[in-house]
Length: 144
Image 1 (cartoon, rainbow, N blue to C red):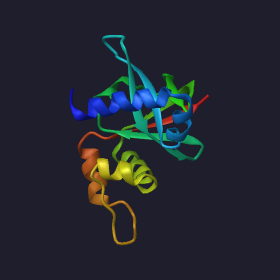
Image 2 (cartoon, one colour):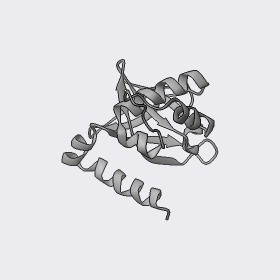
Image 3 (cartoon, rainbow, N blue to C red):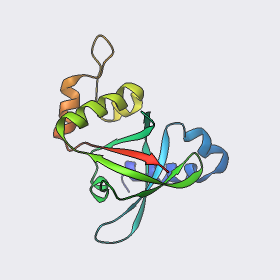
């Protein structure tokens, strides 16, 4: 199992633990992604950023292709499972802007996605562009 798979398994377990999930829930949630062809449910732990009353999740990974605007998804947030509405942002300007919001808020996300910072502390535009070019999308989640 690749390192990312091992880390995901560990994080899924921790996010299910009552006391730990509230602590980790400050930055992490679990998405319950249903495979389009298999129908199988995948538990995907992801970092999120609070923004304008929504939760932003950025990712270049293939699981994101299973999310569609207007189709709800189950999430585990701060130890509680609930439903969230999804809006997928895949246009260049939208992804670059929102990836910048996430990177500015979460330096671990920035590092994982190879996003550096300019002298004034803003996410580097070239790195944001490279993330978009690499298939990055942003998922705007609105918990119900």
